[in-house]
Image 1 (tube, each protein chain N blue to C red):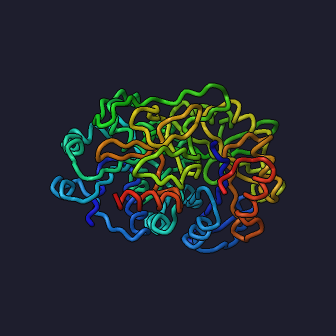
Image 2: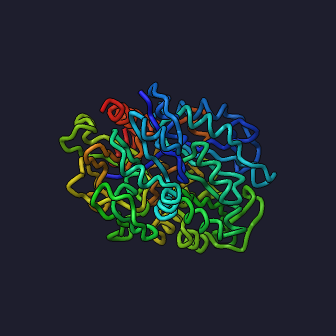
Image 3: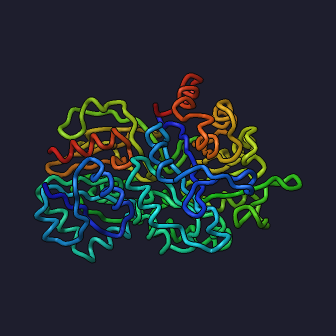
Length: 251
Length: 196
């Protein structure tokens, strides 16, 4: 039986892992390679490595850092940030990334999803969406949550799937960093509407939030950063908790 | 022991090199035909799209080369699929070691997500490659296409329906999952291949 995945996210700025509260006020949470090794040992199912400043400052993801992570961990990882064309994807996959995540670049140029799927297969392409609940609707944002678009979450997620995305990584900007639980209602809506896996992001603060996101939220995977980086919720204890509550996880 | 990892237009080749290094084995990543033919073990990995991968292999004469190898060969993920006769992905004629048609997953209902992505368990049949002790263990998958269970199947995984987790025929071995990304279990499987 396919296990629900627990995914620590390594948001990286200038080579160190950071985690913002609602995308501002960064706090340093350590070296990405050391964190990657630790999480692999602790039983993380996957890692996401996001160069969160890339789209804002137009920087490319640090390929050398990706290589060092690949050399030191034995679980899959996704790389995002600064990916603008198929050449970027090729370079990151060659550096050891298993999947790539695109966010602003896909909203600006949706054909990028088609191009990645055509060249490397659908499963390589994670489409990340940052959205906020504005005036009764989930609206997609670009540039690290700085600029709203005219796109609605559900419409864009569905279009991304149809264009060839292999997974949707949905971050609720309303829930991110607040630690009051995931956006289960929106996540369940996505999961019902789409046929590709949904990764939930934003809001994890307690063991029960993960139980909720896999049941009410119907998510296939749950992603979090600060609670893992600061060891507030150790991954092995989280998986024991989920297993004891009837959620299928890899122990 | 010399290990050649076949270099072609599919991703994750560096991941395989890293995994081999972690278990103390050094591999050469190459598309040099002499080096591949003379290697003790050959690994044919990849994350990719079947028709463009086959086109690249044909243009570089690697399809014929792979077919004629006599040492132990391990195909991983798209590598397993390309060792079959045909893939629905891009309607590609493949290398044809395993007489099997690669098919796309079709969900039975709204809860079946495609791709099949993440950790799932393997059921191991008696074979000389994957240790029986790994029966029921989790391995990592990322794929939308699968090889149906056939006469060469040595392990299965159940997702929507049982499919071929691993294959064996003569000197050709293959896994749909990624041993290089499957933690300790994957490293055991890679070591087992190197000991064949």
